[in-house]
Image (cartoon, rainbow, N blue to C red; front, side, top):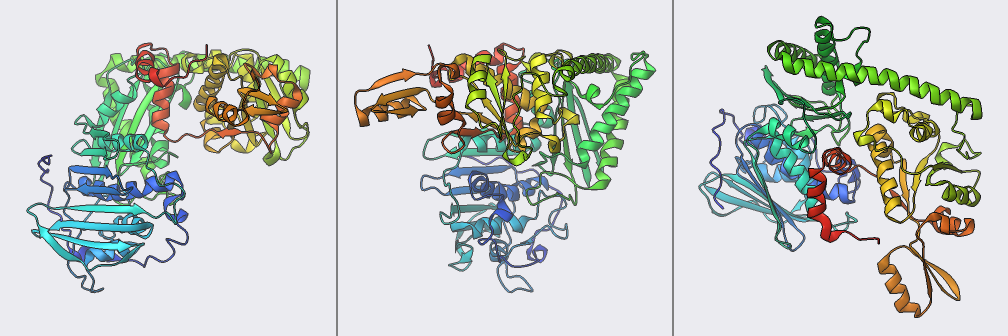
Length: 633
């Protein structure tokens, strides 16, 4: 495939003099999780992201516009870019090739004095040297100075010298690595996970093309979005009904660049995504705080001047209801909290973002009064609904307080107050709730039965959500509060376990509960508190009882023990308390699935498509995945 013509960047040296060394590679293999987060799936994919980040840094300064990531049949990965290529000349101080230094020494790279890279996602030499240390084998090839240079390494140590292996008229770097099976518990890469990451990177770098291909499965995806942040915003809102055209600003102050894109939709949800030097700051930071502060102030000021508020005052949640926003920063010296770089800590950035958004959004409102009135009207409606919801919550709480102090009357609480040992089972139906109350360990297990299907919060306004007795009971029992008022330290239980029937209705109730947790208590999921119980599908009996949890397991069991009686459990209520305890509630024998949010953007898209008010995205999803569905009829 022919490469795209490279952009013409401003003059910037990247020679051997720009390679700085801070310290060696000691300890990476001994404590890999310190550098890549884990030695499981997360850490495995982090290897690819670290190498790709180097190519992205070349793109940020205008020297790279094409990256190819190939999952090879032999289990290795090859990442190729058309950047300047890592310098290969001998370092004036260390006497080794720049390539060998960058690949074998931690904190060695071209980003410490900002001569080769004014803006970068991280410290270039950290990532690639860590990848080398955690690879059974790594081969680096560099196109530079008319030649192709190569060096091979084994678990971070060079096994060949840097040598010329060919000629080339182009420039770039190619890294092929084999993850070390002595380090990683999993060696298979997830194509779909990589798709999500590279799509995101392509949106944030509109001049960049990223190609992902799997040689074993022949899957191939290409990402290139000339529309940048506006295209990203439209993609995020593709499953929602938007209220106005996208609003977009881009400003540069000294070496810092800020891009903001925002758009409101008819939902009641808030989705704000922050990026710093292409890194997704999933835990937020000072840039998000600055954005929220300015947004609240500007909308309040405009609504007040236009006499749209009457006797109400907007708060932050009101102004963010229904918003989808992306804040993309490029900073000279970002300060990330933690090695995984998920939260921005630069204190000065709050004021920087606040100032830029206040100025730009105020000017936009003056020039686009029709859009401004739509946004202000949306916020004022949210404020009125918030006040009504507050009154509804107080009414329900007063009713609950009369019955049980402060807890829902139907809650069968546990006696232990040691949070780390306690569990709340959220159970479908009064019948199953009754069995669960008899089956439980009363010291550590609490039971909250729900009456039927809870409200679909994806398409309900907060007034209706907080007016739902079932939802208020759930919030009260958990104890953390919701959204901005959420406080994890107030959790009353160490585990929240969703326990529903194994039929279609049970799956729907489970989905409704997960939607509620994702939209109103996402930090409960992120902190690892939410689980799903796995009740058995069948009981097979031949001399003794066998509990079976899947169709495949049933076939294997029947093949092993032969003819026997088989009972299909359609609901939890079909099991007596002893069976429910043995199969689903006994910590030593039960099966639990921990709920995690692997990709917040992807999760947001999925919940919007499947649970939102727009029908077409749901139809498209069903058409795409119908062949993979398991029918229960």
